[in-house]
Length: 474
Image (tube, rainbow, N blue to C red; front, side, top):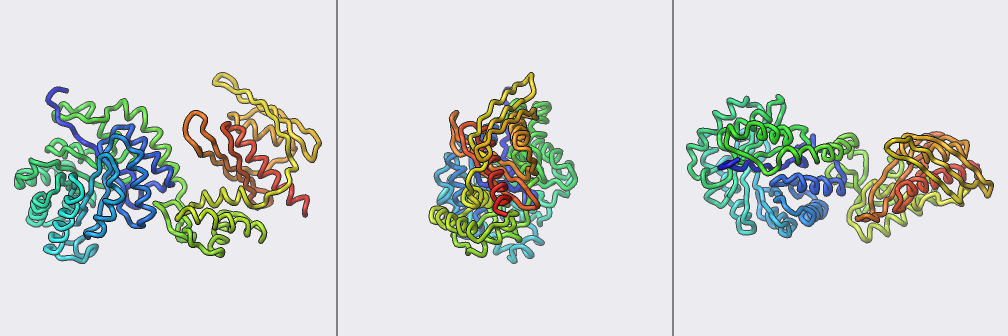
């Protein structure tokens, strides 16, 4: 499209308030990697609240992302600016953001500040950011409910202090598209300095009109939109990109993403984020802090806290097994400040209830393909006695588990099954965790191999041996 202006997209998937998907540290890194491949212009992270944890995430994302800018908000104080910049400065394209409420109701009830003090703090924070970073964004929160005169005053002051981007937010999401246009046009006209910088727009989506409001903003001349690749309460990146692909020539605009990129990567992003939404846990019930919704344990947890966490995970360990888990936890805490519940579960699978293998000498052949169903032939021994089972299944792993059941003549409820990569590349090691339930108790097993099916079989047999050992001891 000749002579078109670029609409830049700042992805805010990880910053949608209470509706943000609850994702693990690794999942957030993977999401940012996918967003970078999607070719979004900016990836917005949350502010630093827990210094070690949040700083580590920012640094990890900065090392992972190759093309997109990394944007991180600061609080209205110099200490926050310095701490955030220390974490962000290694990014290839960093941006510091200065969010500030500009409506009377939010200034008074959220910040407990008068307008004059809010303006002063905002200007001082922007200047501190500019001394560190060349790209600084002022975010006028709740701008649509602000006093027009104060809004114009603080925006002009922010630009004079060095802000290179100003974003107007409809935090309440209460405007119709025509009202958005009527709000933005006078601002762009009354503040001449806005023509020299990038102007952005953001809104929430309580009325399912956020996408239409974004298009109205673009029609007014806005050239940066905060949108989410996985949308829960924001402008939908996917929808707006598709609209611009069809109607962008009406406004003389285009973007860096394109619908082909959206088609290629949206499903992966949605799968990753839906998993986060589907596994919300009440963090108040667990010891330790929450890392963006993932339950975590600090390195300084007591033995009693670890015991409570083990119970919450559903395990009933003996005193000896608990001592093994506690000892391994202490060893790991010497190397890490934060340990996730998933890591604790892996410790339980590795250290607790290590038993003599009643089932051993596992051999298997699995046939599968896209034109045939999966079939598994399993051979193993039980206290030296050979057993054999053959079974079909819905995929290689399901067929393998069913053939073990056929061989052993035992069936247990599969409570959980997890797979994760522990190394990268074609010969990556895969780690699996299998949780079987017997008489209401959970038994876990872990397997690791470059063959993910083999790792899954190892984990299943490991858990099965723990059940058999306890039955025979009883």
